[in-house]
Length: 267
Image 1: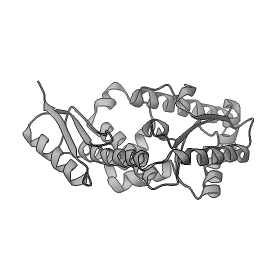
Image 2: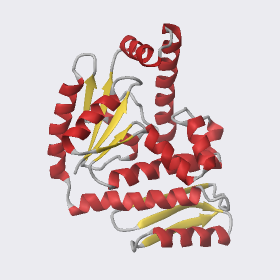
Image 3: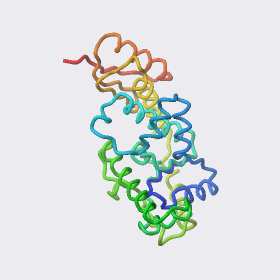
Image 4: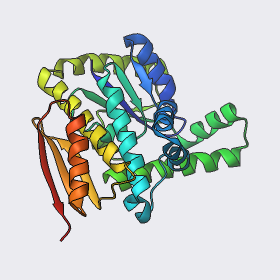
């Protein structure tokens, strides 16, 4: 079935809307808690990084640091893995920008006024107004910066979404009903070819994560992608040993899909 990706302002009601959609269609949600569990299973280093870096805007150094690239690759691999299970909801984590150009992904943006979100945080966490304002403002800024730094996209640009909802003017029930109907329409865009595109991208994401979290491989650049036929390996390597290791990883994880190796040496 179609996939739902929710981009949301902090405390705008994303979890509540996702739960209602999930109950109506039998969908399973994936958000911060599930991503954290995935990172924990990958190793203590990645769990620690997730707690420290989750959706924080990376500095220029972070973006090219080995650990940070591995962190992002693992997070993207998990989003693809969850989406591939079918009946999936991805809450935050940049899911709308990871699952791009897939016709059966419904990308929504959920907003609410700043004052309302501050009040909700105060009620939930029992903290003062000033502290709540600081948390909401800082979290929003971090999410905007993360999307811009990693995906080069403007989080506020409405062209990045299929639908935008204001949780102050519509109830969670109303929003969920509209989404359920839209997902049923999106179901019609699922074909063997479009679903294969998701499956191929999921494999490529797993390969990329495996390479970029391997402490024996420190390639300057590396990407793994799926073009509808081949798993494409691209990047810059230091030596033949790195070339061999990456090729072996990809071959072992490609699930029979053909590989096209376009790795090349520096210089």
